[in-house]
Amino acid sequence: MAGNRKSQQQLTPLELQIMNVLWDWGPSNVQSVQEKLAASPKLAYTTVQTMLNVLHRKGRVRRRLRGRAFDYAPVLTRDKAASNAIGDMIDRLFAGSVDGLLMSLVKSQQLDPKKLQELSRLVEEHERGKKGKEHESD
Image (tube, rainbow, N blue to C red; front, top):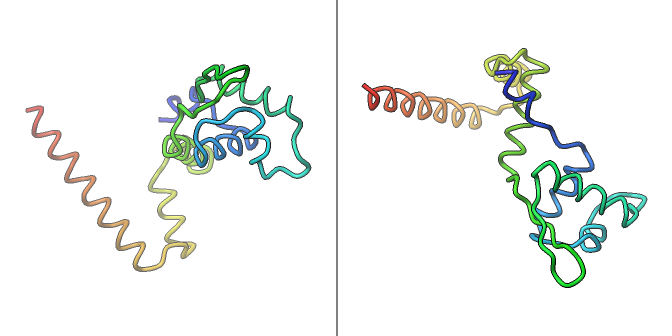
């Protein structure tokens, strides 16, 4: 489990800020991304351009020439980025154990009873789905 996720590059904090702009606003050019970033102090145009080029090389965004400037659009979804980040956290803090994460949440009382009940329901649905797939392959 850990080996799979280590091969996936995690987003840096600045990459994540830029991706959030693209997820929230859709395809944007460098200037639009720069204006929408909440960075303080404001990032230089060339810094934003460099980071978008890095994200493009990593396959996280695609770009399309529009006039004289590129528009950048996310390839990586917000859900996939969250899943990658959570998986990385589970690997680093809980030695790859999802059970360890869940037990930590329960013990620290981060889940109210309603959320805990919803989590139990989701786990049951997931288990039923896995059993159904096992029987299909028989």
